[in-house]
Amino acid sequence: MKHSQLIVTLVLLAAGPAFIGSAAAHPKLQVSVPPQGGSVDVSPTELQLSFNEGVTPKFSQVDLKDAGGKAVAIGAVASGASKKQLVVPLPTKLPVGNYTVNWRVVSEDTHRVEGNYSFKVNR
Image 1 (cartoon, rainbow, N blue to C red):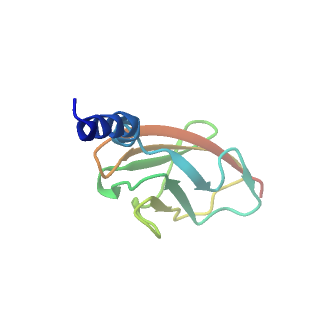
Image 2 (tube, one colour; image 1 turned 45 degrees about the horizontal axis):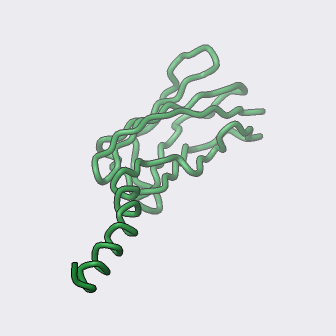
C-alpha cells in the first residue's frame, strides 16, 4: 500500500465513528418551558420544547394531560424561535395541579422519537 493510500485509510478509520454518530442521532428534548419536573407559580400561556436538532412541526404532536389523565385542550404545534423548538399555545388557564406533556416528534432527517415530562402549577 502506498503511503498516500495508508494516510487516507487511517483518516477514514479515525473519522468513521463521527459520521456514524451523526447519522444515528435522534432528536433529544433539551429544554422545556415549563421545566421538566419543575413547578410554576402562574399558569403558563404556552409550552416550549427545545431539541438538540431540527424537528418538523407538521409531523410532530404534543398533548397535555392533567393528574387524572384527562386531556387538556391545547393549540396547534408550531415552530418556535428556531427549527429546533416547538411552541404549543395553552388557550385556557391551567388549574392548580400536576400535568404531563406527551410529545412525538419527527426530525428533519425523519427520525421519530417520543417522550414525556411532568410539571406542576402551584396557583
